[in-house]
Image (cartoon, rainbow, N blue to C red; front, side, top):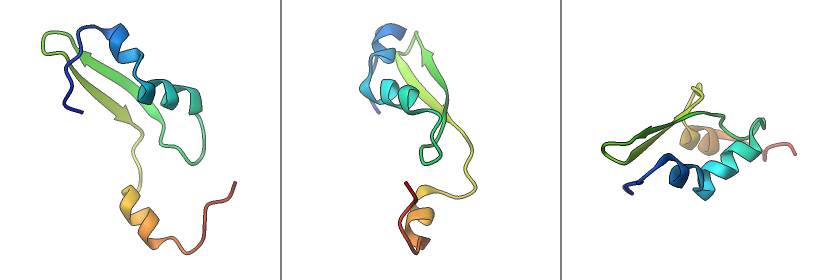
Length: 68
């Protein structure tokens, strides 16, 4: 994201943030740990749980679909 935000409320209203918070915890969704907002610059950083491998490798090497 290269957007600049004016306040934390604007950040919390983002659809992506709301969706990640509502869907957590779920075994097939990376857990959102923290939302960092730097007020002077208006920038945002999302902190996620550490995965053993990246999503590309996981999808590329998968032999079958994920369980429901």
